Image 1 (tube, rainbow, N blue to C red):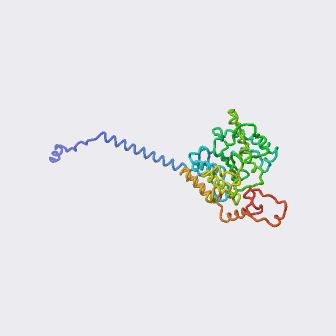
Image 2 (cartoon, rainbow, N blue to C red):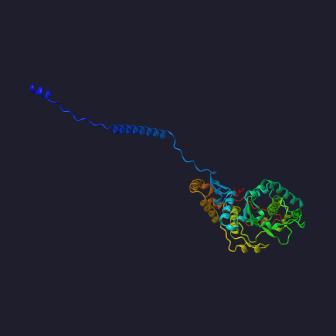
Image 3 (tube, helix red, strand yellow):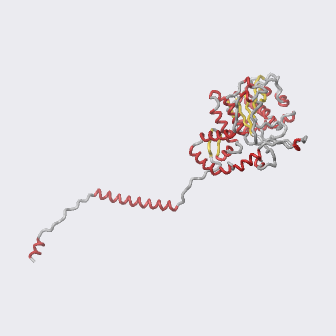
Length: 403
């Protein structure tokens, strides 16, 4: 009992007071609170992501824009024309001609070259039926001029900021009845002369070209020349009609006593021009012709009747397969890389359709190849004339592919 009393009376040992940092405890509470909020937000995001469907990139479509070069637009499905046995289309021709002008023509003469769109000649000859006579006789010439005059009002503003009569070369791509060819008017200003009454354009329209030595030429480069097509035979007359109207409209208020003399412009078809062997490659021949011409135009002394193409360009060669690859690679260089990746996905999906198998290629070549005329047909006096857009034989396999 005495010992217990002593322990109770003895002073009790106390632990030292705990020092509490109020600032640190507040920070820890805030940090813990923030962590809980972040965890809650992450869980909510995860739940939302799991519930919502995953968005995929839209697949490339045929009408997606591949390239915009100046005023020309090229879409994914336009590239089909660069594959085996396909005809090149308007967009590719317009685009490549613009690129040729910027990269092939010398800089000091680039402003002296004007290239019309492929739609120019279409609009100029709208409602003019292929095969009808527009050249021989007064009535045919008057009908042709009236048709061009009616269509001129729809395209007269296309040259609002261009003076064609100051140009060295006016390039006109023509697509007519599924066939491409090109007309190059050389220095049309040489046809502008004083109106002294000696030239009557109305009379000249009826009788056609009737001068001994023209002042300039409209060069026609056609890889599948058809002398039996009246409309193609009068294509230069149509261009003369257009230039006559253009000069009247542009220079009507000049009152300088000058006029456009259509008889001073002759038509020139170089002899020995390389020709295509089927009905599909005309567009690539057109591009090769103009690429060669724009790179090195013939001099004035080489512009004469009867001149041969090889006198202008000795050693000229064309391989359609090479031209297809060249145009393809040129477009690829001008296209944005990300857009080109999307196009490659589209092309891969279309490859079976655009690039037929070897078996189908053989059938296509069989349908297109030239054939010798049978003895029975050759003996007929009045043989049926086959037009350029018609296969060599209507009974050949895959012949309907070309109609």
